[in-house]
Amino acid sequence: MRISPGKDHPFSGFLSGLLLLIVFVTAGQAQENTIAIFGSSVANGSGDTTGAGGYAGLLSRKLALQHWNVINVSRGGDNTTKILPRFDSQLLPLHPAYVIIGLSLGNEGIANSSELVRNRVFEKYRSGMLQLIQLCRKNGMNPIVTNCYERNDFLPEQYEAVKQMNLIINTWDVPSVNFLGPLDNGSGNWLSGFDHDRAHPNYKGHQELFYSFVPSLFDAIKAGKPVPQKIRSSSYMVVSGPESISPLSFIPDDTIHSFSLCFLVKTGNDGVIAAIIGDKNSYIEVKKGKIEYHAVNGEILSTDTTSENKGWQYLAVSHQYASGLTLFYVNGKLAGKVAELIDPKKMVIGGSAGIEADGAPQTAGYKDVLIYRSTLNSDEVKALYYNQLLQSSLEIYAPLNDAEFKAGTSATNYAQSLSKLIIQGNTNKHAEE
Image (tube, rainbow, N blue to C red):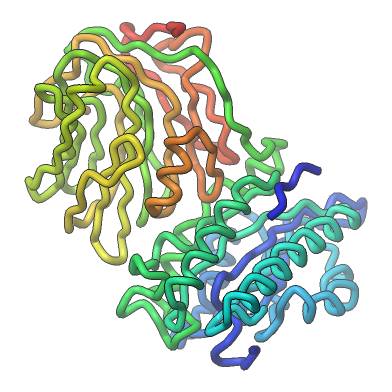
């Protein structure tokens, strides 16, 4: 196993930085389509007063349509120490194929702590999670971790700890889900209107957490897809001809709320290099040495790349559905943000998808296409820019190192999902640096 190092009250102190472990039992008696939810209060639906059962209830009903059976045995107040006695007595007798275990940095005691205590809590949580991961695997189970998330009594110090822990989790060889992005107000607190109290999301907040799960995650892992690793390759895809409309297309099978689209592009020509199609459309365009993001409301975010236009440019569009905010990054730096609400039905890389905009560049190279079902923050975008792969809530990871790009097929997707990045057109070619 490769893993990188690094007060409880039933209504308040146990929800920050929730981690979920989705565990797959491979023992002979395991019920291969059964998922047990084994965690603390958020996993038990606390904060959702509608009776829907929180994100776990939403996930249960969604998965039931795909022939999965979900059992919830969560308990408020658990942390990495308190949950251990329940592992043998309440989890193992269920013999599930998958187990969602939800624990939080808040329950470990990180809120309102001194630097010394905070560092101890951080390490206790990290080591406790690694212990649980090892314990699960020892018992024939494979874990998935959901990332730490916000709460309203977090100060900048706790927020930094949460973001740091999330980056560490992304280096572990365990699948993970990004719970911070959909509801982060930018300071580590819940978005206004999406919290029930300081430590719990309300129903709307739970709904956003639910949408951060990749819909086909369970099916992909059951099919044997491993946790993706960074592909370091000199290969890329070249699209030639401004007539290109949709060289690479992603059409989601399920509703997307928060999302991020990231990729590398290299071109010396003007033209549209990506489009997000919905009730209204947005797109990214190279124009006279600048890279522009055209929002659905017509606003343009622009950054000058004249000094870099002969090399690769790393672009990221990060949209938070709950706040209606899009952040546009170029080469790891924030180029601007705009208020808009995107309802993506299709994402296109390499062309305009036929919307009323300029055509594609005469020639352009593309590589490392990433599509997430969550919002990325600036630390995460910077990590991607510096060549770290983040796999939390990752639905598409296409390095575009395929030997050929044949129309009607799909580019190799290394993410733990069954989604496809469809290739269209006959001008897409393999190239080497």
